[in-house]
Structures are given as structure tokens and as C-alpha cells.
Image (cartoon, rainbow, N blue to C red; front, top):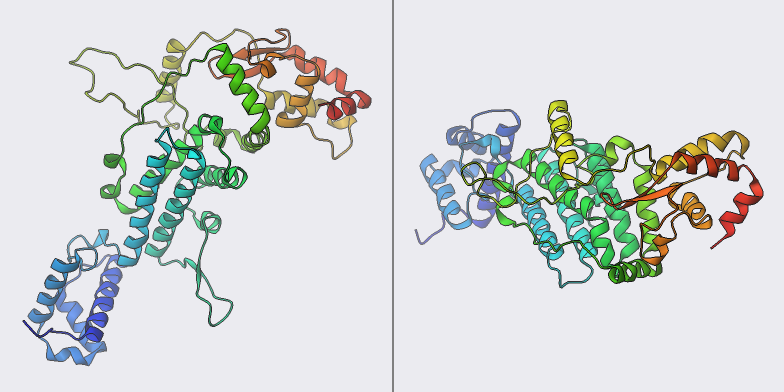
Length: 420
């Protein structure tokens, strides 16, 4: 009709009460009906008595055609109802996750990791706001002054409030990326992209998992994404040396932070694919009758399934390079053993960390000189070797014994710590 059925004020009341009713039905597992809604509406707002039920129902249908089902949803499947406010945060979170992925997957761009983290921080913050709002929880601080606007909870606050699936893993992953962002802001560090790829990938996979768990499969990002193409990670000695020198000059502080953070995590958190998603890229082969048409597939991973875990372990043993036989220790394990052996003889505040104290000792006693010259395999094999599979130096029992003996002498320990 040429004349609107409802005034702007009436339409605003109608809109708000309609969503309030749908949310009430969802929270109480009730089946909504127009008859019940119109009855409740008129009991609170008598001005709607002048309209028939059919007129009001047609008004909803007309508004839906103009503004869509998010603004004016139907009454079916009320269990999937999402309020416009929640959808606004949800839409913002998805768009920022897609922007983060697009930014990270463009090899010509600089500051890729920093840009990715910034966009993913917004994505996670908006997602958690959407979850809290859908659960009836607060998402704002109370304004300190009457004229001030309420401020939304920042991501750090949201992480503390969140108590859903993968709480520990998501907290460890996001706190790492937030801290890293603060340290690398406006620094172009190419090596960083490879160093923290696992944490970045886990952040995205966790995001989609929590998104789908809370709001349904229709909001999945999968159909909007493609896997980024990868270059072979094989370097000539000159390239390796150049990369290593670059790292020594610009990356040492960031690398130290990364190592310290990872060393501080509980083993089950550090090993979880929800903290850092680690992959082997293996060519997929097979006959055309049995293999999938997909070139890349994610295998569903369930660490609680022991039988499945054993099959994966056997598979990896079969395809990766033969590991060097013998008992070897990671830097964190060496540091822990040395600390425990000497803690009784040292002051109460004595520390021995992997990323700082152990690294100082390794350099002082020159057990891995190749690390500083671009040839990581150049080591004192009695104490240290380079594991090419995981691209890490690992250490022998003899090194722990040697180091424990040397560090008993406080004068030697102080001299090592003062060395460059």
C-alpha cells in the first residue's frame, strides 16, 4: 500500500519484540508461533490492537523480502536462530579471518605474519563477542563516566572469560600470537613466517572449529579458501649462510622469545595440533580408482584414539628419514637435567634455561660452530648433532655430564654468562 502499515516508532518496537520473542523460544526450547507472539505483543503494547494478525504477519514477510532472513527470520528451526547483533559480530569475524588468510598467502607482501596476526586477533575477538552475546553474557566494560561509551572487551579479556572447547590450547596459541605481534610490530622478518607457521595454521583451524561448533556448518570458511602453493625448502649452502646471518642480526631477540614461550608450555599443550599445526608435505600417490580427486586433504586427527595414533606413528617412521640411533636430548631436556643436578649446590634464585643459559654454554664450548657459519651439521658429534628431519640440534648424555661437571665451578659459570 502507499501508506505504511506501521510508523517508524511502531516498526522499531515490532522488530525488537520479535527478536526478543524468538530468542526466548530458543533459550527455552519452545516452538514459536505468530499467534502467541502477537498476543504477547498486544499485552505489552496496546497500540497494536488496531492491526489484525494477518496484517502483522504480512508486514514481517514484506520486511524479510527487503532486509533478508537475518533481520526478519522465519519461525522454523528456531534452535539455529541468531540475533542481528550476534550475526554482525559473526560476519565481522569471518571476513577478518578470510582477510588474514588472504594476506598471509600472498608471497609478495611484507609483514605477512604481523598482518595475519592483526586480522586474526580481530576475527577471534569478534567471534568470542558473538559467542558471549548468544549466551547472554556481557561483552562490554561499564563506562567509568556518564558521558563515556561502554567499551567492548579486548581479546585478552575474552580469552580469560572463554571456557569452552580447547580452552588451554586456544589460550596458549592466542597469547603467543598476541605477545609476538607486540614484539614484531612494523618489523619485516622473512624467517618469521616459516618459524611460526604452525601456530598461525593452528590459530585458523581452531577458529573454524569453534565457529562451526557454536554456529553451524553453514558458516564454515572451507569453501572460501584454497591451499597456498609451496616452494621446495631446499637451500644451497650460500643461501643457508645468508639466512643464518640475517637471523643473527635481526631475529635473535624474537627467536629467544619464541623459544622461551614454547619451553614454558606443558608438554601436552606444546605437542597439541591445536597449539601448533605441524605437517609433513608428502606427495600423494595411488591408482585413480582408490585415491581421492583432491590434491590436498587434511586427515582427521584424534590424539585420544591410541590405535589411530599408533598407525600415524608407524606411517611417519616409514616415510621420514631414518633417525640417528641412540639417546639424544632436546635443549629443554638438557637444561632441565642440568638444573636438577645442580640446583642443590646453587643459590635459590639460580636459573638455567634452554634459550639463554644453555645456548650460551653451547656457544662457549663450541659444540655447534656451524650454527653461526651457515652449516648446522658442523658440530662436535660427541656432544651434539643436527637432526635434519626436525631441523633442530639435539644433544648427547655426554654433553649433560660434561656441562654439569663444568658448571659446578661458579667461576666457570660466571665467565660463560659474561661471554658474547
